[in-house]
Figure (cartoon, rainbow, N blue to C red):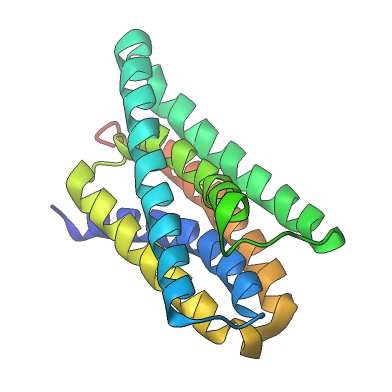
Amino acid sequence: MSIAAVFKVVLVAMSLGLDVFAVSVGVGMRGMERSVKLRIGIAFTTAEVTMTLLGVGIGKIAGQLLGDVAGYIGFTALIGVGIYMVIESLREREKGGFDLSRGWGLLLGALSISLDSLGIGFSILYIGVPLPVSLVCIGVVAATSTTLGLTIGRALGSRAEATAATWGGIILIATGLVFAALKLFFSEL
């Protein structure tokens, strides 16, 4: 595996991690026990990896049906997820939230932040990185982002929460555009 391939998966994982970080900062601003932080970290990380795998399955089926065009569809999905993240981060600034530390709030929070992972899963097979490496990287970044966000949430305040999700979306849009251009001009991707 090349350095470029490692860079690609780290960039994608960090884009996903910014969204997880943003939500974790918001939850962490209230302060909580270590056991609650662990529960949130496990839920968020599991959701990120599971939705990526689900996206891979859907993307693989699409790839078999659509051939080489599937890669471009995957990159378009990546751009779409980025746009969605930016729009949702702007909407979240305007409204309050609910308790993401337990029950339905935790489940819905984990699912909502992992929707972008579903989109990533569509395209992850087309960026030239082995799936196990991608999943481990996404899981490590998600766990780290959750831990970091929960730990320093109070200190960073709501400003960091809002802008992290926006920047995560912008990075995903740029990543999708770059990967699509690379595939177009260098068919090895």
